[in-house]
Length: 336
Image (tube, rainbow, N blue to C red):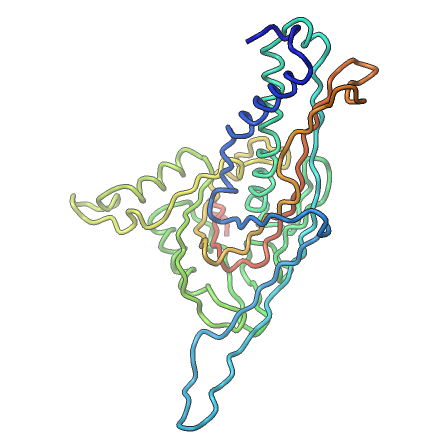
């Protein structure tokens, strides 16, 4: 590696891009890759909003008598949510001293950190839809109000969600909010079988394939014990079959138990739930993937006041959750 003080501007920019990409690729985006989030790339020049809707049809056919016209299937419009894009950004300054005094570690650390921030930010904002899923809004890290309601106007995790084509209501928050255990999983599965309905009020049968938890060690280990043991972990005798072995994919969401600033929040450490990747209406729209805009030679990208070279990090995206049917949840703290 040549001395930084001898590297030409163009070569420095190329090096910076490589380091930034390395930082970006090092991020494990737990929410984006959880299977619960549907990612949509939004083309440039197509506006700053997108509408996401639910449309249901009836689950069953009706009898067709001889020579009679078949019944027309019902189509029920569900709820609609409008996603609005927002931009996140930060400028990274590479100082004159860093460039001319060969402060290579400082340069690398700044660019690696810059590479991680965009992916981290998206994952934190997605995680906070679970973190603050028991409320209708929260105030984010810069003081903006983020509305977290789903299509029926209630918070994501609620006890009396409504549908558009029936007077039936349903809950997706487990009663008494038990911590993860065999009995709690069975309670959650009962909620799945009894409270997964369409907008006509009909029961919907679909696979719920994800068990998600925070990164709380006790909760994580409990989940792994239930999903990986060959025998029933509560059984009094060896060799009893563990019915939960391999039943769900365990997803650890390390940014859920945080406050609005991304700092650890122990009051949320036992959050957990079961979700269906097939039914999910948790949407991430990407207008601008995280990227770095490097300065160009002979441009005004060199700060005339500080002599810093300015590298701009930007991302643009939106988040909406249209409906709650796809997820069942418990805070794990035993509150009624």
